[in-house]
Image 1: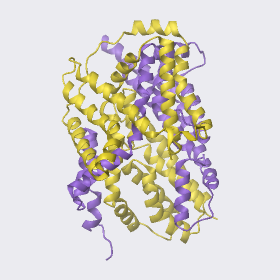
Image 2 (image 1 turned 45 degrees about the vertical axis):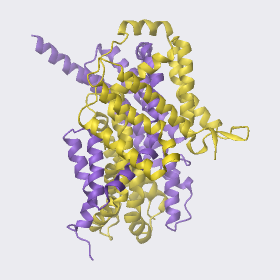
Image 3 (image 1 turned 90 degrees about the vertical axis):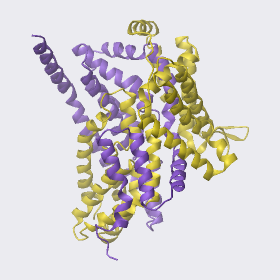
Image 4 (image 1 turned 30 degrees about the horizontal axis):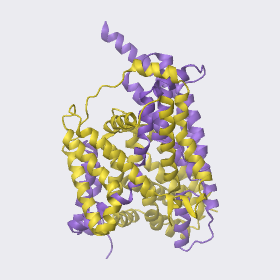
Length: 328
Length: 242
């Protein structure tokens, strides 16, 4: 199905931003590692800008190999500590305070434009058709809505602040430098998850967990199912990856079939036990590591450390709730 | 054959796990650690190098949507250069009842509710970095004066954690959310056909409420804890000077 604003367009937009950042890095003499840093972002950006083009010209297997090689080089650059940041002059706290005084709450307007437009488009833009074609990519409604919201916010932001697009890109580079490799970690982890699936890591874990299963004790089964959802999610960084493995391995044969548990609460609460794991693992980088980088925290694990008490309490609640609610 | 824990076929697929744990614990660069863990796991279970490379490329390409926060950076950068953080802090200082804990509690309730209604739009790049964190930090610095970096970091990390907890435990209540559909599809595939997405959404409510109560309870104690930490820090500073 085609659409006017497709997910490919969103990827091109990301690619363009990353390439501009790479170009600016290359010209920045104040960055002692500017060549390797620029190469890092250039390689990353090329998977967005040329990825789909490569698939149509080279075919999937060859493209995937090339991207795989790119990934190895990216990891090598980061691992060899060849990522650097420039020492650029920012406009100073005094100038920012002055501008904040002049612009006042208008600054909030352009910041709030992003969530507001995203919500508006996902609610009302779904069925919008232009010339018989869907306006938004139906499979990626939130992403395309978010992309449009960002473009809208930039346009409004520029009007309000009276600055040029160059400023926006220069400031994105400041942020990209501050966030660094963490921006790429989520995709790398998706990649590791892919290898785990190919290597049948889940089956191994399922077999090992089953060695400890006592099919008679309902409470022990509930506890093992919830804990293994948490644990396997911590390994995979994603509860969706753990869910089918652990539910097929423990919940389905023992809790649902043998102990006649009600499937709906078992799976709903089991998935939540997985989410408790998501809160406690660096493997869920998009939620735990990227925000730490985004907020420029000194300790990249601090978000996780703060989440652990809540996660453990909710996990205990989940075990208790499943035991009480799922069985007649 | 009866599976035992010492079976090599059983253990080799797990080799990536200790690599990741050790690599992260020893603070090697995570990109390197993760890539090596993938490479070694693939080779250990007998995939050839090209097959591993292909898996890498395929998954990397197919998860590009994870980089979408890059799109938000130009707006944040532009607004921050023009004083967004400073404005957030002055604005919050003008509200007498505002405190770090209360701001986070309010955000938590709004975030969990909107996630349960299936509304996107809030998130780390969208709302936490530009608005929530500066306001939460601003409220504390309005009360206590200039904050030391470790307390600023703690408040900012709480802002991110608040978004995660509210988001995760709220969204499964929304019946059109991917996780709910995944669970329904899984049950169907395994021959359990009488479970509607609505039932799964409803059974998500007890945990959603537990998470709400637990996290709000923690946040309600945050202001006092921050005040205590700042007091200790000030004592330490004064001790250092004398």
